[in-house]
Length: 413
Image (cartoon, rainbow, N blue to C red; front, side, top):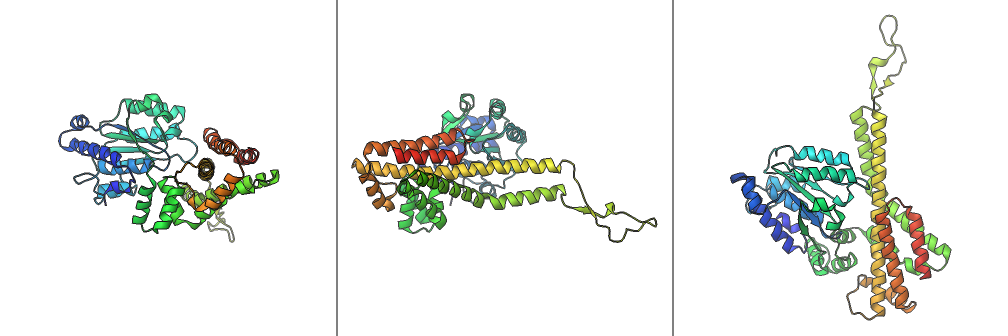
């Protein structure tokens, strides 16, 4: 297997990145100028819809840049292996732990970029969700892109070029990914050992989102949560039913976040306490008698490390922000499933003849189609999409109120 095998349905992107990695290899024999003339550049912007594999493509390219063999990207050498496992000395990865990427993270990244590679040919800085930069962070990054270090390579991932400042995207070479087809995702899952029938169902349900397809195939609880979301339209009879359905949706998102982050939060907190010495004791703090001996029964005192409370409070804020981000991401996945259902209902009403997103819910789709007009279905579909956009644009909103408003809108459309 090569590093490119993880990319599903992205043949043109693989060709572009392979050619660039070959050009980048010239830096060893002919210098950075020769590599630049052959098509290598210091700044790359990977764009595409969620699930298309932005981070996978960026990491595969990073592995190819540090590959020790030819053609680059063998997937077997230490350079490829350490990048794919995120242990490479010359790779730094920045992921937003919360709702945004702050200037402190970017300044640390710039300091890394100024360092010479320690093992490979390049110093690589990979930034997930580059659309989440704060203004000050984006301005700090712009300075580094304008005057890049000789051996530094920035790999930015964002949903679209419009989500990145014009001054940043103008200094990057753009690589556009697309959502893979259902056949591509199905074939990839079958190669991974998933039953073909299940693979095709989850490939359709995920609407080309490779990560979500893998999650549905591997996790029965994820499939159960999807079933609960798709039953929501049949529950919206009275106002109380709408509020209860919205509460269930938010509770499921909170449960997702708790399951995803609980172990990690606990491990981070314990690691920080250990590093700071919080809870440790010192025998030197015991009271002593006049003859120099320790007083009988005296207990050691806990060591108080200066700044420990502030560090723990900062970690708590980071974890809380990350938890909220996870809740919003889980809600977004639920809304994508719901939008797909109304899309199927509208297609059935208009006899559009297109492949359904949720073929395993054909009876529910027929029932919803028979009890509403196409105009009502379209309004409901638009309400779901508008709610997704509202939550994306205003992450500070209370999810409970937003989903309650959606449930009432679906009932009254």
